[in-house]
Length: 372
Image 1 (spheres, rainbow, N blue to C red):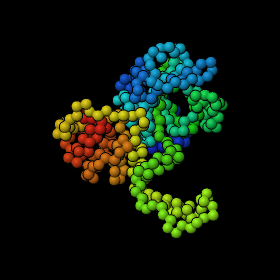
Image 2 (image 1 turned 90 degrees about the vertical axis):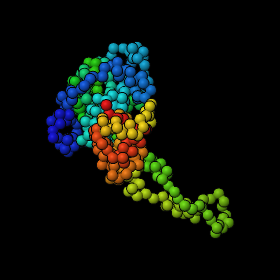
Image 3 (image 1 turned 30 degrees about the horizontal axis):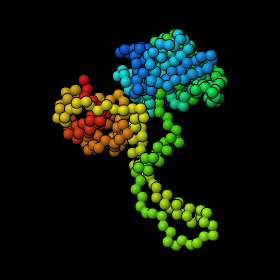
Image 4 (image 1 turned 90 degrees about the horizontal axis):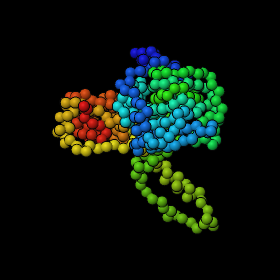
């Protein structure tokens, strides 16, 4: 079905023609906001310890960067122009922002990263740059001029505290107003400057580097390893050079390392855990006065459950993963848990004990809550 969010084209058409291929400007992509976050609300988030925030200013032609928490008093000292306040992972804190992020479910959740909100008065900008991942830029209030370029030469200003391109040659330019959205593939240079006070909702996607994946996988395999044996050399001979690492010793080390093996099942477990693992600053609040199992089951029957805004839940053929862990659940419970992972909620109803036990364990960790 065509989607308003994609300018009246189908997700299939978007993926075939635009995704990681070319930009797409979508006028009036989304205007159905139950509420608009104002600067006061964003400032409150920027001052919180559990939100990632940054302040970028341009003074005397140079960019300056401050990391949060950023207080309201600090923001009150700012001039009327030429600064930008950015708060990442707003979807972890605001219900309707999380709902908007998951409107992009024509892409798998393991690719969704976060929804960042930036506020800028006139002249506010983070400079010409490019991202290594796909991004949707949704204008919310105000106006912003966007210039884009397919040139990704990566010629960055050396002494700038943020990645700003030294040379930027605009190929296309638009002014985005409330509800307009711009999609950009990875490494597509872009330069946004606020013309009026307003916000940009940036929907970003995970694109881990091969080096990062390899390092995390080796850490995972290390925890999984259980190798037998110990180095021994009963046939050792006297050598003329005691400081030399001889070929026989190297061959022995190689033989020991060849015991390190993995299979598809190992990779599956790694992927499930890695792509649901919370970011370092994310913590879950356990219930202050937890329900006992029977009361929890009764509340689920009455109102259903919803995942916590910070929870990431995925599944593959044989396993269910949540926030970096594998859920210990009977196979018969998997269809319902898969439904929860897809919809991020379960409706009210009677569920069997295998499902309820899995849900209750997640509730106890603060990963989900009774709805309502």
